[in-house]
Length: 136
Image (cartoon, rainbow, N blue to C red; front, side, top):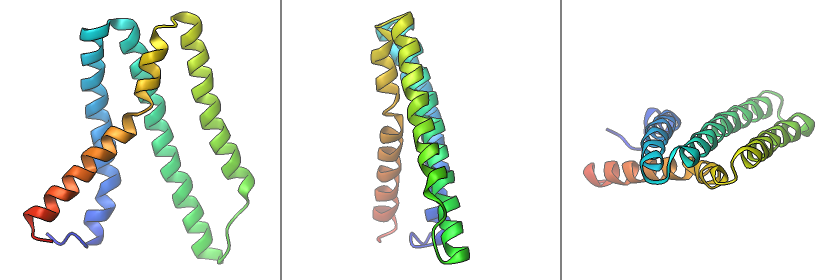
């Protein structure tokens, strides 16, 4: 396996998404067992929003890269700004809804927003393992 291969690098996004799903399920179950259903519910909502945010961010970056390579200049920044604001509005609305229903669930919600960090950490560990295993 060539670690400089394009297919290895392009597989990172797919692997990170899988890590996010698996970790989200495992951590939700752990939160439910350890802290109860309210925090687990907040956590799964935070995981869902962070997953959508991660996926949306990839789409925006790809669209901007395609636009820049096709025309030689970047597109309008208005659409990008609106997409960013929509994601933050979604997070704020979910936080408000959770806070109104159960303030304790807000802790789980904020913890769930860090799901991509854990998934990217798993991907980094996987890539280090592959590099060491293949002598890169």
